[in-house]
Image 1 (cartoon, rainbow, N blue to C red):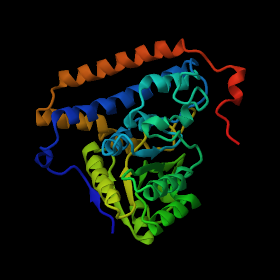
Image 2 (cartoon, rainbow, N blue to C red):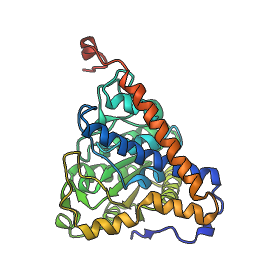
Image 3 (cartoon, one colour):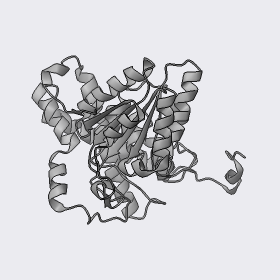
Length: 332
């Protein structure tokens, strides 16, 4: 059976160093400010393409990726900016990509829906719902065959649970005892459809039992709870005990994409989840622990905003691909 994990007693985390905690906070703020800044760039018509954003889900990406090694890999989705920043990609390579520049992380060919950097352990985002699940199992199979200790963490939304690729990927990972963590960011909505309209059992982690491995439901707005669950999952994978399914309960504060006004989310529901904002919640935790005061947290936010604005100015001046670039990086 799966279990629900929450933060618990603050004193139980005394082993976490202040620098580590502040690093988690800074990365979460960096993701939020990146997404807010990009939102306005798109609304102002200054950036091409489209966006699928993750405001409100910062703790899931940061909590999981903070438990991984630099040479571990993640697979992502079309909502991948947060995963990228949490896995170590810098704002500059992401903004360059979003502006379509050749200096972007995918040379301007991927755009918002396909950000990634293989050198930093992130497969470019996969826009097909559930498409990253069998790929993550395949990568984990390769690591096992190489007798490597590396693992794969696979991010997907609750909507992907209804895809055949979910069943196939999890079943294969279980049969072959693969070192892969399946991370379901359950934000309650697959596009505009609420999870309880498409699933009788809305507890996604319960699916793990039918494949014969461990599942756990975690408060996805508690970055420390997510981190600790991910640490346990990583340990299990590295010890050769097979895959883990983590269900992270969270909530996106924006529409499915930039043109979605999100009217299908009931106002009381939005207010409840907004009150549990992961960044504000973790900031209060840091203040209560004496790790930082409000002024220090404000300084982090202002520093992050300055870095973002500087990166935008650079990205706007970067060269765009030429016609000759159409035939580069193409594989038959």
